[in-house]
Image (tube, rainbow, N blue to C red; front, side):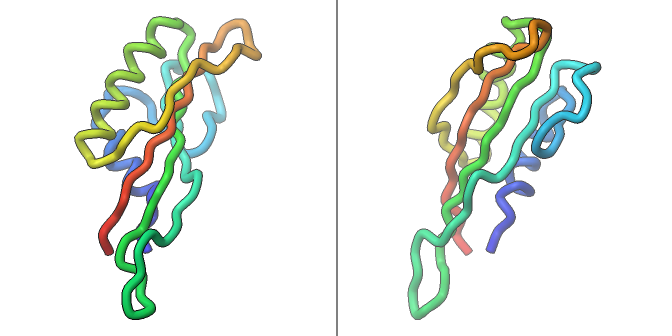
Length: 113
């Protein structure tokens, strides 16, 4: 089994931005990129052994400038694609806080074990 959180962190660590697991504890030093495992499961089995694993991660961009969410989402997408991930969706999340903009993205990747 492969920990998809570790794989996502590897891909995103090249970005010049604060990177956190799951959810930012503070929103004082924006922008922040957060990530977490949505699901991981076996995708192909042979002789009762898992050969290929399927993993999904969610990446969230938090910023106090709306344009920054868009420009960072392009950089996130490029970094993830360079590491074999495929973007399944991306969307702006309606604001709950007047000062923070939020974009969410979901990525999928097959891992050969």
